[in-house]
Length: 198
Image 1: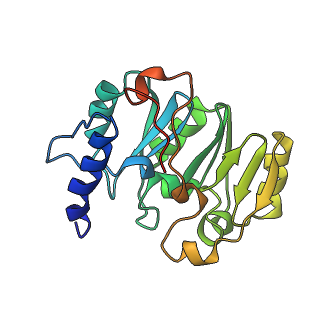
Image 2 (image 1 turned 135 degrees about the vertical axis):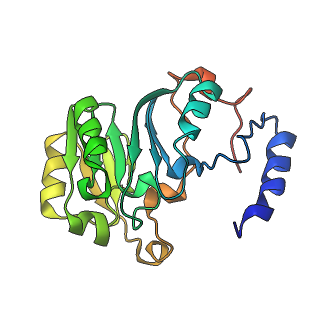
Image 3 (image 1 turned 180 degrees about the vertical axis):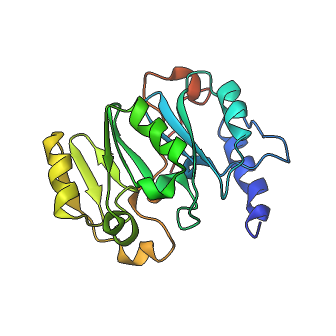
């Protein structure tokens, strides 16, 4: 709530740059990309500590090009956003930290994603490895265990270590530093016109 005063300034900037503002009902809380983890059209939506599960239905209406493949409930407040406990590598591959989720949510991940790589507590808690950034065949992480490095290598990815010690003090890592647009496969999810952020 301490950042609520920022909203009006962001809304003004986006309106001035041709974006349509689609507010959710005031009693529905959704924390944005922290709780919406996607690759191209496919997305998981998280709820539990920061976002309301009711937001999922609103997102489905607002972004018709979005394929919501699962609603995931987190049960550990250390993973206050979904993006701290799960990250897409590609359409068929995710990394996730199973203890962060209810048993039902963990089953959902494994059911809908062919290669669901379960990471260790060290990868999740020390390295924030689920909060990664994928560029082509490179997976950028703060650091990771040899086991995760090998698992990603078997999927055809090179792992690049990017020390994030200072930013991790804020509770996030590489994914938290980018604003990613949805892929070309989801034109309905884009703004009315393409706009590069400064």
